[in-house]
Length: 207
Image (cartoon, rainbow, N blue to C red; front, side, top):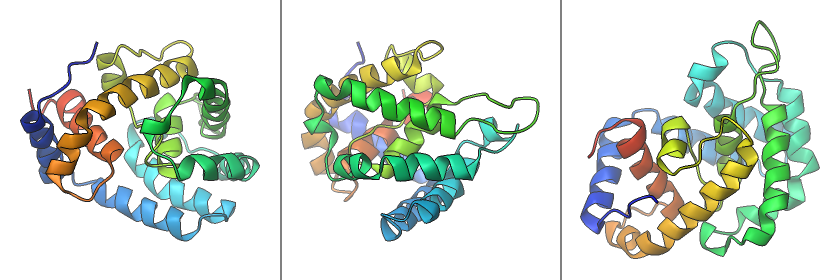
């Protein structure tokens, strides 16, 4: 089980992230663009591409995804995504797992590499990042190190592992809600948890 950080450790992790992670400007830009173009699938797909091709460069250096498939995935699920967009993770229920897994798998396919030797390779990280950008207070971010730290290894059945990760993140969010308010950054609780996870598990900047 993931260890719940103290208020001081949580705030230290977030502060360290904000001091060291230079790519967060791309996150702010993509978030702004998606908010501005909400309801317009082609423009949202372009806005997501701004972040994904930079933020997940290690994966997409082998080839890009098909923007048309991403646009279709957004358009086909616009209503459902809009419903998730206005919620936060504290409202998550396991009764939603089937719907979330279907969304996750749809974006896994839409964001797979579409050319070159790695054609057809899918990325659970890209799917989670996309869902997070589309509903940033509800869907958490992860990467391999974060998923492993939470006991959610996604080598097999990544959509099953993602809903497990959501459940564990909700539990953590319930315990850290007060600490996030004390931090007073104006960021969502879910974004602060990701900043802490990234600083601690991805980068090892804090112990």
